[in-house]
Image 1 (tube, rainbow, N blue to C red):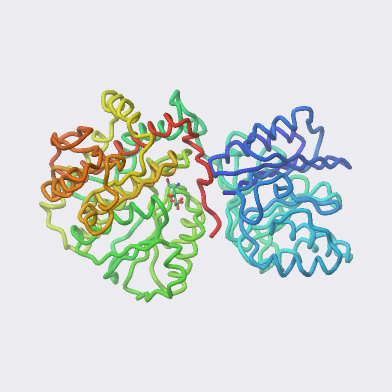
Image 2: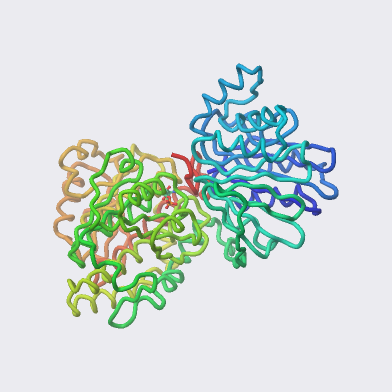
Length: 602
Ligand code: AGP
């Protein structure tokens, strides 16, 4: 989703902006642009497509001396990905970049059109810069004009605005979309997340919703509805080396290989020999809680679906799961004895964040499971458990899913432990399996090589069915999502027992079935379901520890004594299969078409 970078200070600004935007590439974008004001000089450049195009356009330009600069990567919402629609948007003498959606932009645009303002783009964002200049031309000083502009906006936004009317100033505002301020040596940075400012700034302030203000020279003036406010900077601690590819072909591949290590971090200090310890929660947290509702989107939703089996089976607590975008508009019945859990890799997903706000308004206790500390969802929740997966750059989520599922599994045991609904024997069995999981996630060369070879047979056909039962059904959904995200082939996940209720009509040799056949869970049942498909000539790729005669292809996993260990092993197989198919098809694995890493619009 859109990314924002800003800078005010004496350093060369083009490189700061372009490098910063590069760090935000993982969010997804289809055009980019920058604008710089130095003294009286105002320069701007825009390009459609990848950042190299913008680099090419700006190759003969370099800024000189003190100035203000803003940059943006745009993921199209209102209007096609064209240069005219790319940010920064120009008024007569000011530029704006914006992440989010201005919901009342049409009303504002009509008002400005009737004043004779000429619009160049189809975007909601352009209204902001014209509104600002309207107030400024009416005689308000630049900050008052900016303040009045912000007061008129409805919807979600992170905004930076620069103007020739105040060439030493950047104006900023945040409501519902992420933005932070980074503090360097005599200069100030803005960004949508930490990564663009790592190595440049030493301290950071994460803006809250409703905050706005301006930076003049290196001094930040921050306001909210109560007026100017003091704020406390936090040290910026982050390790950029983590975000490099380390010799892997794609970030997604690196992140698949990292799963074993990060899983060790996820459980460290939390999974003890006979007990689950979650410092983030205190003993009274579950006291009045009799049910759990989980809201999430995409891959995070799949981890939630898997966990619902665990909460009910292990902790004996009612658990239901909803897609956040559906939950928002269904007028849900919410009771205060329900714990509201949100799951999000980025912590910025607009639908999940809004669902959380709804639940809070209804008085529910909230807990988020997230990979990004200080993200909007973490800050909005009563409590948060971090997944500790490290920065995930591949748009197709892998290690975030693995660690989310682990945290949820831990949480199910923790609830059972606190509510005394789990026996010590069962707790011990689960803990032993958890401690074994990092080992089960090690990617063996032979496995990867086998999947690489098999992948060439799965580049065509009229679709894939991933099938599984119980927790392997959400894993089937996730396997299908991974494949379609990066291969652009049609894939669906199905509960194996449902195939005969309709989908089996599609079966023929060009229908590829990826069958998740764990030995520890309903093996005979799923075997029968696969036999039904095989009898109709479907091409079967079985993933199982147990050799299976009817499979056209077979990927062998380890025998294990616990379904969750089988789950994680099969997860790796489905991830590698999607990766290898996508690579053979020549796709951009890390930045698949039309997708964004952080979906900050509805
Ligand atoms: C995962 O591969 C997807 N890119 C997507 O489904 C993602 O999981 C979804 O947008 C939710 O994101 P979040 O976890 O950051 O909230």
